[in-house]
Length: 506
Ligand SMILES: [Zn+2]
Image 1 (cartoon, rainbow, N blue to C red):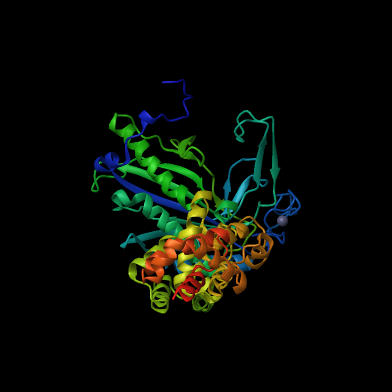
Image 2: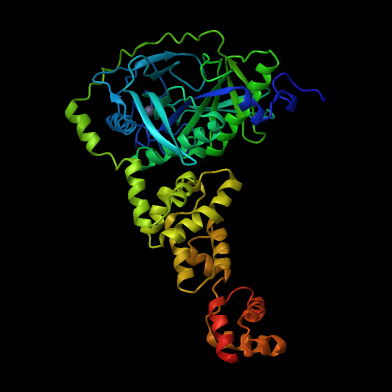
């Protein structure tokens, strides 16, 4: 064994996943932080636009300057209530903000305005489907809080504070409204634990997208997931000690992090070691978690009610107005779309599992057939998203683009093979499908004269094949079509080429 630091985990410290699951029962817990897409921050008027110059979207309130007073963003409260209702939670008749006190450079006030014992939404639950198997996910609470700023550690090898020369802090994100959604312990998943975790976060993304309350861009951090996992010897046993893996920022990573923690904790428990209660960091590149902050001693955040904000007391009328504004519930929406599209249960499950429901819906709305929309999103684009480690809707291609590609195929201007090159061009930022086709010269040759001449050359060059076709062996036409396509560099409509060959030889 080569020298390893105490923080890394070697392969010997992992138990193969299947063995781990045959010996232990996993219990999951998922905490998802969602950045709301309000125009301004939670307690001030600063802009929330992502990606601006550091520290250009700040004011005395979100910088925590002495004497500055917060004013609550009504739009954020409405979004919080709508999220709570969509998760089938009870909405508190009255609730308060609290100060969570801790010291960290990216939190200028030295406390985070959050909710503690009085969250706005409690005790909900949602039904998700994993490989055709239904799972009920209980929702413990959804509460409001504000985001922190961002630290950038410069000069070290890892981008972490350890070994860095100095650190920079950007407060543009400080004070952006967040909703934290916490599940109840999720039991009974068995070996499906990683898939259940992924399916739930994917389901939640889709729900939040449908509600229009967040951009839910995992790669930009507007949806972040903490994965809690513990193992116990069997389903009836008390819960084991859990680890909390922070900021797992893609659906694929959620699945991998659960799988990794199952293998890691199982290896420890099987050799008589204990699982340490701690936060852990997820490493996207290596697919491992490493030890972070110990939570062996309960942290004392000295929560107390926020004195500068009045309690929130939404009226029944207000809550019912917001309930009426909710989109169609996900299960009903799925059933409706499945009937509209004529998809089988299995096809629909594939679409949902790929996180492509909304994308297919929008692609159909933009003019593509359901089958074509499903084909592009679930094959070519799913593969590219998987390669890039991002969700489908983070790929950088819109439903309108996909519908436009299909419409070019339907018009006979490109074939499927060229369509794949058009997708590549759009993904590379070369513009719309139409622009890519013209810039790359991808259009199929529709000039009948050119096509006819190429067919004539193919027939002349393959007299034996031509003779077979004349004798009625239509299957032989493939060789001539291939010759024409090769000469045209793939830029011909194979169907039309076939028609021309048969016309000329019969
Ligand atoms: Zn501000």
